[in-house]
Image 1 (cartoon, rainbow, N blue to C red):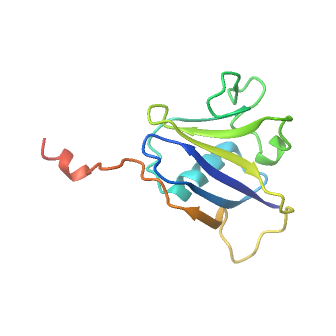
Image 2: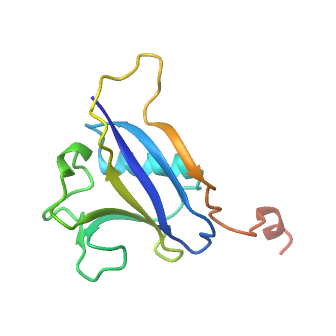
Length: 144
């Protein structure tokens, strides 16, 4: 079955505008798969460590991390929802630039995959995609 997730940019080193998308993904996908799907959706280089955590807010001190004790990055996305009351799921990419996205399950009912569609699939997008390395020119690096 396919579920729809809402992905919203919360913060990041170069986050200058709001961005979000509706992501259709197989409910049996792992959080590793979700990481890859978000990376593709924002067109980042996927060149840093990442984590998922559950908390009341993105910078909350009481975070439940997916470190294998209670939750694992191998857990299926569908098994995470519904989240505990008052808690939210966050995706944290690049621990230096602190790209944080909130992940919510849409109210849309799970449905069968469309045979002509490749999943994960960005069904809708709002705002402007963030630029991972604003002002970075990889060719200028060669001049050193």
